[in-house]
Amino acid sequence: MTIPLTLGVVAAALTDLTTVWLAVCVILPLLWFAFLSPPLRGAAVSVAAAVCPWFNRVYHRLYLLGGLGQRYATIAFGALLIAIYTMLGVTLYDHWYLQPLFLLAGAVWYNLLTLSGHLIFPIRPLQDNLARSYEQLARYLELKSRLFDPDLEDESQAPLYDLALANGQLVATLNQTKVSLLTRLRGDRGQRGTRRTLQYYFVAQDIHERASSSHIQYQTLRDQFRYSDVMFRFQRMLSMQAQACQKLSRAILLREPYQHDAHFERAFMHLDAALERVRAGGASDEQLNALGYLLNNLRAIDAQLATIESVQTTAPAGSNTETLLADDRLGGLSDIWLRLQRNMSPESALFRHAVRMSLVLCAGYAFIQFTGLQHGYWILLTSLFVCQPNYNATRHRLALRIIGTLVGVAIGLPVLLLVPSVEGQLLLIVLTGVLFFAFRNVQYAHATMFITLLVLLCFNLLGEGFEVALPRIIDTLIGCAIAWAAVSFIWPDWKFRNLPRVLDRAMNANCRYLDAILEQYHQGRDNRLAYRVARRDAYNRDAELASVVSNLSTEPRADATQRETAFRLLCLNHTFTSYISALGAHREKLSTPEILALLDDAVCYVDDALHHTPRMNSGCNRL
Image (cartoon, rainbow, N blue to C red; front, top):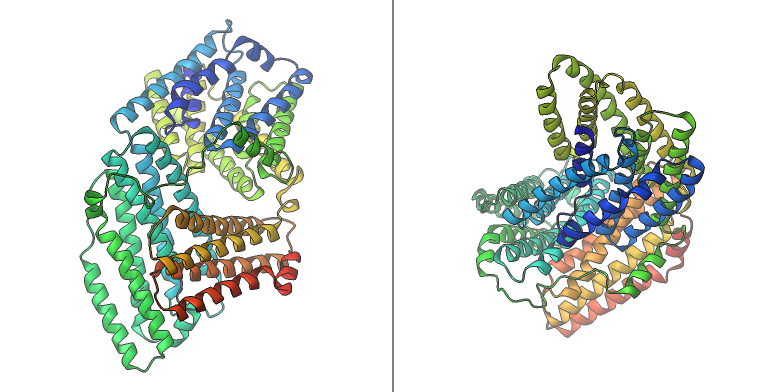
């Protein structure tokens, strides 16, 4: 009974849709009953010749559900997971209905606890996402501070590359937070706790724009002020603001008011004094203006952090153009069909992953039937967890899975000898389960180690703890090998990279962002939805380019020249986005027609240079 109950809890946790009440209350129970029904369960233990085509069709269609949104991808993953869990314990009981009941009981128990937690802490998942956003923002600010290091090598682009990758992670976290906010806003209308988190989200977006902005080439600043303390002071200020964001993240998690550090005022005073010494030293007006804008930008970030709690108490309850969020949810059957159509060709990464996974699981099942492995369904589980949409992520997950399994078995076997009592092993099952849930999203190797310990302890209650240790290792290695072969030979990423198209999308998004900023220079500063959508799209495309270049750097067949070109393009695009962000950070209504005309001409020139220059087009085609 322990094994199916535990598997039910684990499967429910891995398919947890804590921000979607409808899914928790309706969709998941239907999913459990559908996959635990006798006909499907009987099909799951049929001969491989009959089951593999069924696997191929069902798994492929389930994975394509991910094109409709993250919640549908989670539901599809849960369906596959519970199907494999059902096959895993098919021989444990003589009566067909016992294992499904125990699996369902474990899942219902977990979902009841989840719903109870929602009743007590209704916005906790949203707060967790928001805290992660500020944690990623702190990391971004810390990496940005390294660009002000005067001892940095003159030609080193590594800090800028790391900054671009960190920007991608920050953008992904902010997008996840936005989804949680939209879900929560549909559930309540204007409750104070939700308004607080909405304001925190807007502040994070504004700080991100200001933090990503660039006012002058950092190499120029380092060369000019290498022996001045002004660079160290700017670096320290950014580092202090990173620590402040980290402190704010902890305050959100602990549901405590944020207390801004009083040392910031003294640090700004010393920075002002350093700038005065630079001015007295005869620095050029261009450099002084750039440093002045940079200082104003840092002061604006400090003001956002210092007043974030006071803004919470004065924020209006009503919605307006500055507090609306772009809703990306499905708009009807036509929208569903449109999203599915986008993922019905090999050009779609989701389509390739769906085909890849269906073939991987079908091959794994055929291997189990051919060899007659007793615990061979661990091969399917390993392939399901390890195989990711791209080569880089799969390789990383594969290594962590193998390490975690080996360490888990190495620790687990002595534990079985040292804790022979049933009570002690039950206690360890609970402990390892809790630790697995705690580490599954942050340290996959640790999570794999704890789930391996849990498996050994569960089977030891049946008297098979030592017997399953070696099969666990062998099945993990086989599953990892199948997953690696799939991402390497079944429509590998490097055949569908299309870096020029990704770069073109990034350029177009930057131009739209620049147009939105120009409009605000004409009409006045605000945070209307159209502006925030243009800004988010530019950051999303920059993050997409960073992801493609990062994957390119680990691909086995990419030549060095192509990697260097892609790396340089990523740095240039991120720098370009940073300069645009600087314009956005300082946007104010201008009343001088000559300056506005100059801005209009500059924006037109940039658009023409990016889209109609033969040299740019030929450079992209070489990729």
